[in-house]
Image (cartoon, rainbow, N blue to C red; front, side, top):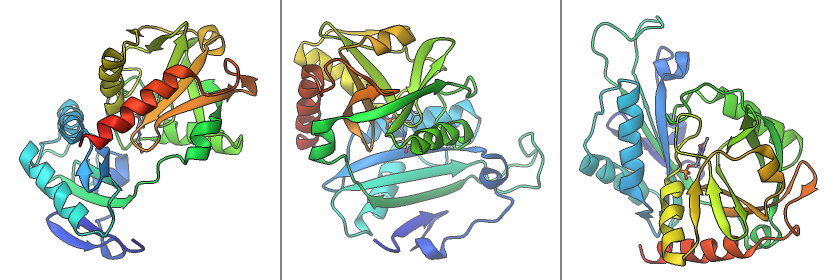
Length: 283
Ligand code: PDD
């Protein structure tokens, strides 16, 4: 996987040889959207959900979707089969395309740039899961269209860098005193056995794991509520969890150097993690 085979605008090529023109609007303006899809045993996990979110992101910013669902799934399979790994993470990026620089959309039709690459899927180790991870908090200063999985990620990049400088796993963001999400994960709290997460609105990216965890709650008899969550509630929670394609579900045991609950991964995490693994095994 040193030089994986990637897909770029119809061609399969080694990553080291893939090139885009500098006037690509993805490069110039961050004018594009992306997806990150986990593959277990070379099969996409919640693949159709990821494709549906890609369609929503493209539609919201007015990029013509170059493929239907079956074509996208076939392209993903092509890239995955070209690389010799069972568990992979597929990255898809679609930009508005190449045009003379100007902020508004180009007047003449442009062909979207489509890029797909794959890398090894490294989920958190058993040791990391057993111990739990630490996070820091910061004010959410991103824009108000966080529901779009946009490649314009500077706000998320700065939040992730803040976490990296504090040598913790994630930066948990608050907007006006209410929980939004982490730099690249959704955030969940547990109080008295009940799971809560911020509503699916423009202030967060609706993770594909968001819907999955809602389903797992139903099957596991865990009460779930989507609602505004205050900073005080996060610090007073029995458990805090992160979810993302690469983290799966991950317990948070310290925030800003304060212990979460009893400082150990809790029972709701345990149930959800087991149910998540069962969903993967059923692929
Ligand atoms: N990020 N919120 C943000 C801001 C994210 O970037 C992500 C995922 C999520 C969780 O979404 P999902 O369950 O679909 O992975 C929430 C991916 C992994 C990334 O940017 O690499």
